[in-house]
Every structure is written in C-alpha cells, then in structure tokens.
Amino acid sequence: WFKVLLFWPYTNMLAASESLDSKTKAKLKQVIAQQLLGRLTMEAAKTSIEDTGLVALDWLNGRRTPDANQNLKGAIIGLSLSTDAPKIFRALVEATAFGGKAIVDRLASEGVVIDQVIAMGGITQKNPFVMQVIADVLNMPIKVTASEQTCALGAAIFGTVAAGVYPSIALAQEKMGSGFSQVFSPDQENVIKYQRLYREYSALGNNIEEHFTKPI
Image (tube, rainbow, N blue to C red; front, side, top):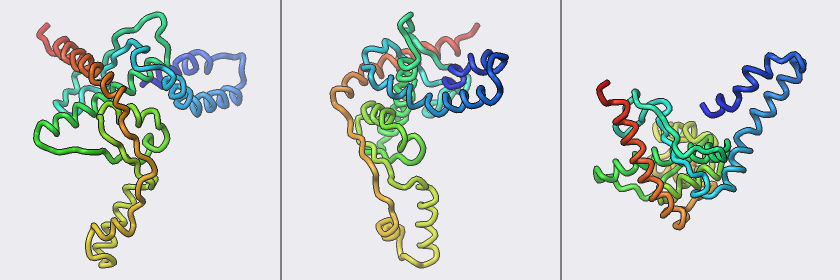
C-alpha cells in the first residue's frame, strides 16, 4: 500500500508525460522500485522511536489474528507538516511488530510459552532494521534461518525420514538443518520505549474499533 502511494506521481503523472521517452520512463521506474525500500529503511533507521511522533495501526486489510475483523481499518495519528515518508515507514514497521506482539501476548495468556522467534525467508534476511524493531517490540531474540529455502529444506527433512534415510525428524534436523545466520537480541532501552508506545497502539485500536462498529 505504502509503495503504491509513493508511486502515485509516477503512475499518474510521469507515465503520462511526453517529456520522457518510454525507455527512460521504464528505467526510472525500475531504479526507484529497486532503491525505495532500502532508502526508506536507511532514513527510518536514523530516526529515533520518539522522533516520529506517530502511532500507526496495521489494519489496512482489516484486523488479523487475534480477534480477526476484516471490517476494521488502519490509521495513523500524530501527522504534522514535518512528517516525511521515512517517519511514516518507521511507524508502519512498528505497527506491524505491534500486531505480532498482540498475537504473542494472546498465546501467552492461553498458557503457551514462547521464549524466542525463528524467522525465515524474505524480509528476515534483507532488512536488519525491521528485524531489530520486531525483536525490541516482542522483547525476545529472533533467530534468522541461514537457508533461503527453509520450507523446501523442511520438506526434504521429512522426506528423508519417510524414505528411511534417518530414523527420526530430530536426527534429520541435526544432520540437514541450515542453522541460523543471525540473531537479533532486544535492546532493553528500546523495549521500555516500545512498551509505552504499544499501549498507545492498543488505545488507538480500541478507538478505531469503536468507531467502525458503533451503530450509525
């Protein structure tokens, strides 16, 4: 959603411009698309937790687990004339992490013990900033698998047991597992800051839910 929003000038204005030929337009779009996430991440990482002044709600496609409700909507509060794209990006990253915390907290309230998180594929290996924010919000270490094809590796591990190559899943994991490429440990100073911000996130969620569920 945010990428589409930032691409609006290109999609609706530059693409229709007669000042550039089609080859230049295509190249420009490719360069921006390739560099956008990295540049947003770099600038967002320079911004402290307090500096954004924003609290975002990650319900752009409705609220996910727990208490899923597809009729609810996302929100961002605290916008000002000094709010720029990297600050909004950081707020959205934090909101996504808060959504994950809501899931972890619900599991914990039901007696499920979670001491660490194992992350795999995609963003986990490409964006240390995002992973560190999640570790700080969850206040637990996140281990990133070394394999870029973790699901395929898992299927292969089960396959070797089914074929009789190894007598147990545990042994197959020991022999074939890729291990971890990196561990993100929570920064306790940030943990405290995010605990406060999470309360604001939860309050915002309650207000948004009340707004969209109250009778007209």
